[in-house]
Image (cartoon, rainbow, N blue to C red; front, side):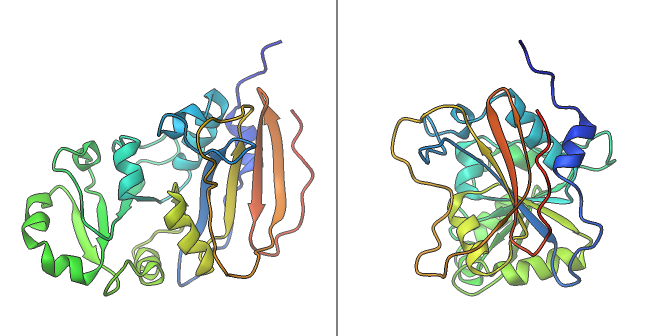
Length: 244
């Protein structure tokens, strides 16, 4: 029997928008899909791990955030395009591209957004790549946070002061791992794919020698054999699973 599509009410129950967010930074939720054996990309892209219900969750989370954070390499490999406005929001979320090299092609499709993306890098790169920044303007806003690498804490303070309440991190693992180590993640929305992936299992996080991080399973449900889990990295109370 074909399972019903995920409707908005069902997704809103599984991925509620917090009523309160921190004053100094956005509420940050990360979204990843993985196979049970730790593969997050098949044929170099996440689409091989994903599937129709996972894409519905992906679109729902995008429709209910103010900004999307992604690394430049992930945006390039996945062929990121400008985020779209949804039926619940008149404006599309701001796309924030993080890069410590400013290796951004003039032909990147995400540069063709009605609202120019925010490209964040470090001050050393800004000094070294003035011509690159000029070529990106006015299709993108380039800002530096940190001297040698992106200072995500400073970036988050900036985003919050400019009205970003909900931030969605879409990867990759390097950025997500940095946010975890800095205590900047509130939720992990994890899709477990019903397939064993080929290639090398890399996982979606590497916190190195940092202490293990405890999470609470705040909600979960299954659809078309995909398991959708929402973990809280705060002290949010445990909720029952959402059926079917």
